[in-house]
Length: 581
Image (tube, rainbow, N blue to C red; front, top):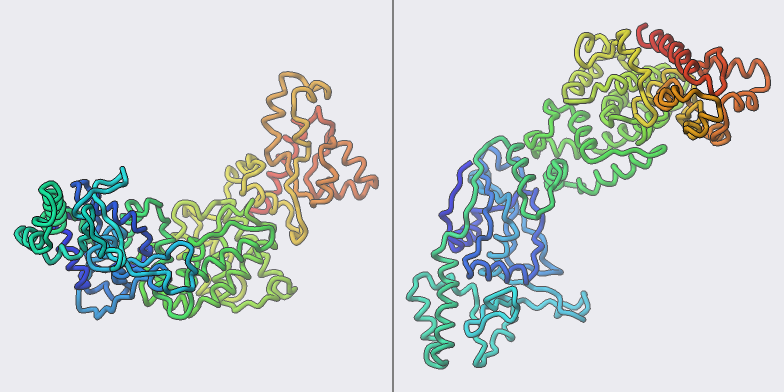
């Protein structure tokens, strides 16, 4: 990256006029008000710095991959707020403005264009409510605003014709014609500003117009960084850090802007945002975002590169994603429905990326809606469920998810028959993303706590026959509300055990999956009392105890520590049987 301070405003405006400078699709549209433009020119006249700019040199080899836009010259609040798309031949290199669009557009509008904004109390559908205005500078008197020194104003032609002893409106754009210093004096002479006004007014006019001339023609006000890197993702990261709007954009927002500009028939931004909203409303709700959808598009379109790099969001790739958008969303929706049916939601799905390989598999087999409920696909659904649970427990998508998504896609693509769980296990065996559980791995699972996403996944292994189409809660077997010193004393718990009781209440040894209605009914009833009331028949009680790994010990509150230790042993034994087979 190089740093320069050699450009004058006149040079830059001329180059904008010649389409030497363009705007990439990631840029927002022009939003500055007339006052902001007037203040910018006032700052230039007062020799205030206007911050540096960030330009990006785009080589011929990359120009055709992205959309570029021209600068807006004649802004109209109703009829002309969008930048015109630049016509790219692919024969020229481009200087793209990454940071400084608002300031450069303001200079361009002020010196070469017009600004039409709605008059107050006029109807929006009245074309007369938007008169064209040019920027003018009063050469006889300073600003009446204490924030400004010089009086700039956007005026209609009629308003600018007003003349009196304190007002002489100079069209700011005309300064571009006054290339030399002596042109300034000649203009003042021809306009009668030396002869028709007193010495003080003439002196003010001379100083004011000379200042404007210097700011535009002589002073190198446009200092800028020029990024020459062909690593487009590096350029995008720079833009994220120092974009002029002051609001830090996410990487996916910028990539989405690129996609929006390159799709031909659909509005990428609207489509993706609408799908995110729809996906998050499935089941008990999820927390998917644009990053998830964009990553799914890269994976499900079978692109070699699936990283969040600008190179992977080129025009060719974006058009393919657009053509496959309906299929991508169909199978993502089906995958999310399936995952919701396994009991997952925003509260316990610890990695959204787990849905992408599932969607890819469903797309590969062209799954129908019936896949979710058909008895013919029950074993396939169970394989998918096991993979999801194991992946979430092992946190395989932590760190660098692309390193997991790539091989998973290849295994699924090459597989035949049902979901290739065993091939996936075999591929990752011995890797740091392995789905194989050692004794230590299993024993550490008893430290899963209430409220952690991983905890639900562990419990779902222990409750394989639960129908999660019904609502289930992660329930404290011994009610957490009882774990207070005052209740400990009433229950006869030794004061030396208070901390042990509190320290174990949220761990998996005291957690079970319980349907919503029984859980609500259970509330804060002592566990031994609740079991006695709920299961009055011996066989029903034994069935509950067996399915929920309840040890054959005293279930009174004071025996909580023994209960937890014995239950943890039962759970560990069961998890080893499940995970190490």
